Amino acid sequence: MAITALPPDTDADIARVTEALAMITPRWNVRIMLALSGPPLRYSELAARVPWLQNGQLHPKLKSLCDAGLVERAEHTARHVTYGHTDRGADLLPVLPVIVTWAEEHLEKPDRPLPAIEQVEDSLTLLTRRHAAALLWVLKQRGESSGRTLARIVMPSSDWTNVYPPLRQLVADGLVDTDGTGRPYRLSAAGDALGPVLGSLSAWSAGQPLSKADQHPVWGHPQATPAPKGWVSNQPTWRNRDLFSHAAPARPMAAIPAGGPRR
Image 1 (tube, rainbow, N blue to C red):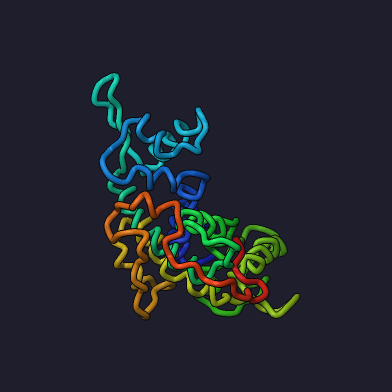
Image 2: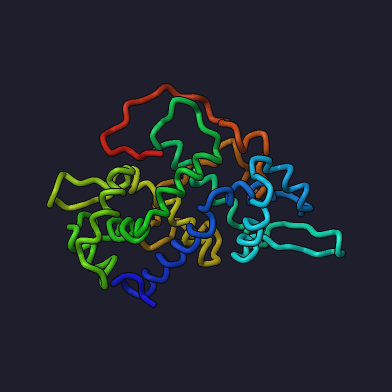
């Protein structure tokens, strides 16, 4: 079923990315995925890697990741059960450093350097806002657009004024700019720079290699992709000592433009 008034291929692309974001954004999901990097783990071994989860929290999270096809449960014997990535789950991990690269450059700088994992979670929260992916897509494709035009494309079956709450949120998050009430909307520099992130999520959700991100019809970018940071290798194996600590050099606080991306 169409979710926008965009061409069917574009509509399906946005729907896949929106579904992918819904799978990985819920609290702790990315941390569990990263804790499972490497050989499959018994439940107790995994629980030891995510000690911040209280009793009873890990099992439903694992079930949801299994249902999403990102984690698989292998029952070797009645008393020997392990959890590990599916191929699809392993293919997701290289998307995460792309997200952190964007966050390092465009998210508001906090008072303290943030671990890479927190930057991933903050970025995903921004992208999972209601209608965010579709609005960003249309603005990237069309450039400046009025609220009424965006409503007609993104939510064709809804009252057009319903577009303004998500637009105001995107402006507050620093991903969209406008010159004021009644003026057109456009991507901010941070929103425009999401190309590698949304292109990679599109490629992954369509089962394509991440190298296809550069060729995305909307989010493809001709410039060279920045090299991954030191907190992750190019393979789906994260260094645990880097995962929850900020490995990039601390930078002085800089002035944030009005409407800059917020955490």
